[in-house]
Length: 311
Image 1 (cartoon, one colour):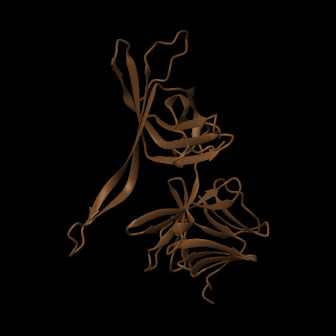
Image 2 (cartoon, helix red, strand yellow):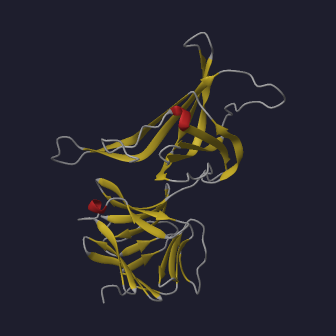
Image 3 (cartoon, one colour):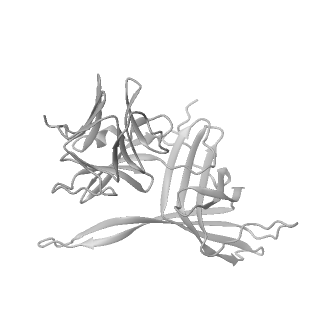
C-alpha cells in the first residue's frame, strides 16, 4: 500500500488532526519560559503569512522592485465558547504578553506529520460571535517567524524548536539551500537543483568547502579553517566591497554568520579554541569525527584560522 495518493500528494490534513501548545516566551522571544496552554484542539484554525514590502526604484526601470524585508503571520483559533468549572480558567489573551506557539498535525494512518513553531507571538484580543445558536470564541495571534518541519514516522514533541538553514541571498533572491540538524550535525540539501549556479557544500577526503558557482569561499581542513577575510565587529556585517551573493547561516530568524562570494566570513566574534565549545543551536563542522569549527550565537570558534584561502 502506497502512502501517497495518485497525484503525488499525501492525504490532506484535517483540523481534527491538529494539536497546539502555547508557551510564554523569555525576553528574547526564542525560548519558552513556561506553559500557557498545552495540547489544545480547535474547531477552526486559520493561518496567514504575509511579507512586509519595500519598493525600490532604479533609473530606467519602469516597474521598480518589491523587496520583502520581513514576514508576518496571523493565526486564528476558533472553538465553541464555554466556561470552565472549578478554580482553573481557560487561557485568555493578556496584554503585552509574548509567546511561542506550536501547531502539529499527525495522520496516524500514513504516519505523515507536519509541525510549525511560531516565534514572537502576541495575542491580538478575542472575538465572540454566533454563526449559529451557540457562541463561538476566536482568539487571534500575531507572529513574526515560523519554523516548519515535515516527516514520516514518530512525530516530534510539542516543544518549541528552531531549524538551522543555509540561505543563498542576493539583492533580488532569498533561497534556502540546506537544512541543518543541530542534534545530528547533518546538512541536508533542500533541492539539489537549487544548488546549480548558486552555492554548495562540497565534502571530500579531509576537507569541506562552501563554493559559489564552483569557486571556494570557505574551506575546512584538518586543524584549519580558511577564508579570504574574517570580520568580527559584534554582528554579521560584511565590510568588503562584494556584498552579494552570500550565504547566511541561520538559526530560525537569527543570522549567525554571513559568507560572501569574495570569501569574507562575518560574525559577532572570532576565537581559536582547543576543543568544541558545545554551543547550543550552533553549526558544527567535523572531519573524521574530529571537531574543527562552530558557528553560533556567540560567533566563530575554530581550532585555527587562516586568511590564505587563495594560496
